[in-house]
Amino acid sequence: MSKNEAVFTKDVANKKLTVKRAFDAPLASVWKAWTDSKILDQWWAPHPYRAVTKTMDFREGGYWLYQMLGPEGEGSWCKENFKTIEPELRITNAVSFCDEDGKENTGFPTMYWKKEFSADGQATIVHVEITFDKAEDMDAILQMGFREGFTAGLDNLDQYFGNNK
Image (cartoon, rainbow, N blue to C red; front, side, top):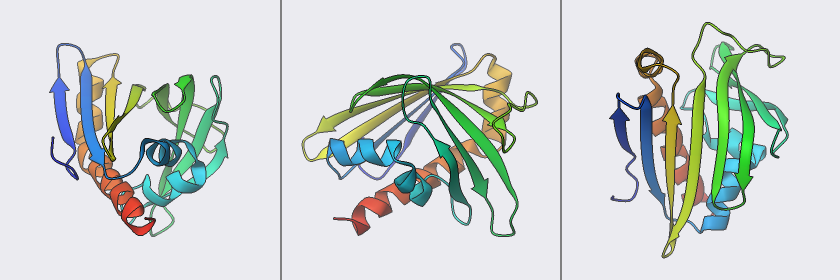
């Protein structure tokens, strides 16, 4: 896998998307960028959108409630419910669209994320697996522009590390 390139794999049979990305940053820095809302707000959303955290309770059983806010003030709310956290190794969580109070919008699929972090010399590899209840849910998220948006967010993170060396 070359650095600065997200590799996406779609596994229809297992209702799973896999994304791998390397970053030229130490494991501790990459972990912090994925778990500190002040840093997440700087890179998570694809431009011209930005992430705005309302609540971050980063612990097992906690959640991150944020809005993807567009340039005209439009946006959507998301909630990540943290299931397991193994510092600098793994995070599992369920992600759903919601309202500003965190009430799930059942008109959109829930995504089940497993994020794994590993050091590779001076770089860090992030391996994300996202599973869905149905293959149609995976297709719906992809049709909404997930691949392009997540790639842009990961590129923002790469830029964040470049600006903070």
